[in-house]
Image 1: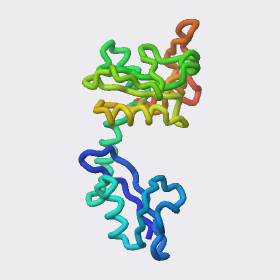
Image 2: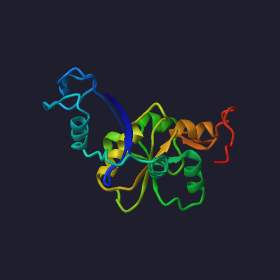
Image 3: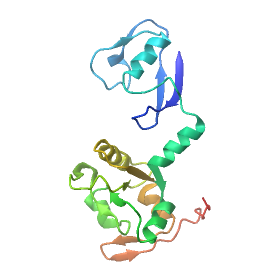
Image 4: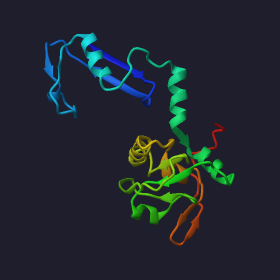
Length: 195
């Protein structure tokens, strides 16, 4: 049996679930490739048992998301560089922008107004009443995602800036460096999409 479905429960972020069970009898889960949980669990190829097991992880598989629900939930947790830039330009963005990259990356260039908090050093002095937007280098880095998760687990309202500073630079938005502000040349393949 192969089954894939996006799902969300009332207390969890939307996630994608892919459960693959081959009908070969019982299989110890701790021997499945990529399985992280080490406590022993065995499920059979029975779909009901598989769904019951996955439900124990906190996923509500009884009511899969519709396309509209999925994209609404996604927009609640992500923001693009153009929206961040517009919010910062307004002078009152309504959030703290957190750069989760290393000190070396921060020194190379950062978004004006960002606070540097490497992911491994998230402080306890942030106000959970103030929303946070996290960013890292770009789509190939999940430091911002990990920081957003850590903050969300502490009760913060968090959004991840998709594209990271890489897409900020590609759009031609200014960055601060150790030698002062720099406005990069926009990527010639990047145009204002009007989104």
